[in-house]
Image (cartoon, rainbow, N blue to C red; front, side):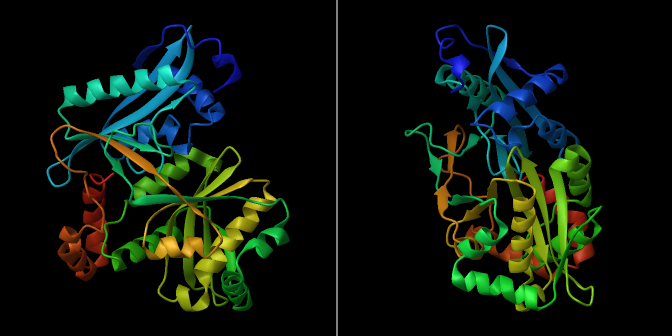
Length: 353
């Protein structure tokens, strides 16, 4: 809670829909709120609407004329995957960011009212911390975050021995990391990677929009072999004193050359030299290869608390590749020509959120 909020909690809180005129004040609140994340920034409203075609409901709570809480929501409506109101699709973090509990509850109450008026199957808050012990909760995901040392060598020495050996292998292999001015090389590696895993790719337009929208808050780093071959790439976000490597892709040759290990070390080194304090490895599903990979770096998992209000369903949605009912679809997708998959994929993934 902010210090100035202590004496304001007794006053009434009002909730309304945010407008374009609120953008600057909304973002100023997000930048200052410990409960807010990169995915609470107002620019995501435009991306949800313009790239994915989702109707948005951006709610702000006010007290005595000042913003004391925000809640970004987007409506995802699909015949295949259901009808939901989510904070926030395509984000690992979401839910309410508020100065005090009465503001948070006012925002959640209005979100529930909107959800019921829209006739959604469920309302989803992608919380970092638990808020409602009596609400259904998805415990599939964890997040990995770690504070960086301001000293590059100290960060190298903090990596567990076996993983550090993989980083040094990448260095010995003569790999080179470069920051790219556009998304061309990243998208080539990303779309190939997700196709091999049997999942639909986001559109190139989406990634280009991220770069154009967030500017210096968004970067792409690509790893090349000594012969210039593309091996691995990552798109990262910057928020306050944090870096979030968020979207990634790699070639099949990357594993043998330790390109992924090298990539994340180079990104960590870059973050350290830039004065960034926190490396946020993002979320992973428990029991997966990415979960194990991040743990091997010495990062400890922190459970995410995705909380739901269920209206027209009796169980939590399982719209992810670990759901057995998608097994056949995944196998079919892997056999599909990649050019066709890249065309069809964005039409499907927009409804997954």
